[in-house]
Length: 334
Length: 85
Image 1 (cartoon, rainbow over the protein chains, first blue to last red):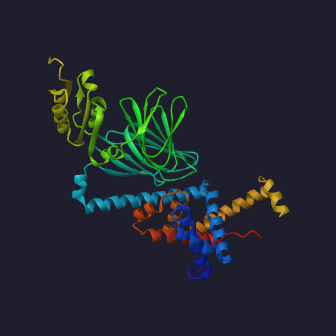
Image 2: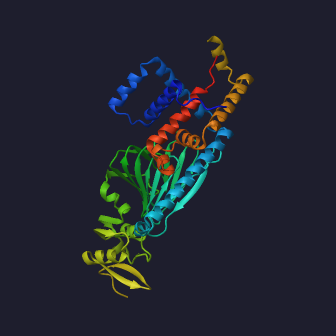
Image 3: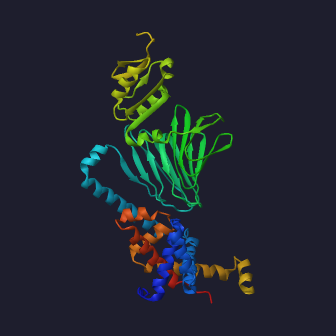
């Protein structure tokens, strides 16, 4: 088979039609783009080419799970993964110092084989103090906080993720055919194209929605819909949920090495600090656990956190076997 | 037209299945005619729903080059599309 003449008017017109398909699919057209498209489409030859382009695309989608096409898909995904790896390598060489400074932010690329019958499943974990960005094959991303874990299962019909511990922010690529579902403890969060974060802390699931729409389903199957800027707090194993306005800037501080607390119980603040702490901080007594603290701390500097909270609240620190323990001030020294 | 509707209702007709198999084989053959990079970009974009920006970054191409590759692959499939007679 010979390739067609790439300069022929027919081929050029076909390419033009395909480019309009791309732009329409991506929904990035401005008012003047639309006007231009309408003008272009008013020519019957263009109209025919456009219909043909749409038909060609549908023909591909109609056979996307056939074994012949699956083989080509696997090859394409492998090639993309190789290219992304090479790219990360190039960047690391070019800016080694920067990367050293950035510490443990690692780019990981996931490619499963999105075969129809065998959904691939892959677990990503981050170590203490390490944050990871995971690029998923559909264009979605997962930003994993330190000491966190997420399980990713993609199939042709669904994108299912499970937050096993810690916190993750999800940037979801739009795909109406494949809902994006995140499970955390006994809650299910369903999104189409959006950005939101999910955290498990102190036996609570916390969901913050930055863009778009998500709905959260509880153990009683009751659904709560969120709008952008909402924060949902759901105690595990209880049906109740609490929805309030989120402090969006503060909630994103963990991505820039900061931990911000405003009137936060010590227990959940310490749990977050310990995601970064080589030597985890312990809480000595219940009275200390319920103390409320406020402040902005560097995620990397546990020492500064201990000094900060003991300086301004009714807490004192005690070192035992190389571990810092926070007690309520009134608690008798043993 | 009446005949076409008739066929539509008998989707398990062996002739129809055979026709579908032939058009799948033809489509795969046309995809194989394409240069490897063009074919990969087209599949990533069209089937795997990888964003154009992500494809461009990975392969170190501009957004418009990726668009050009997608358009080229689509045009090739269009021109060699089987015409119903």
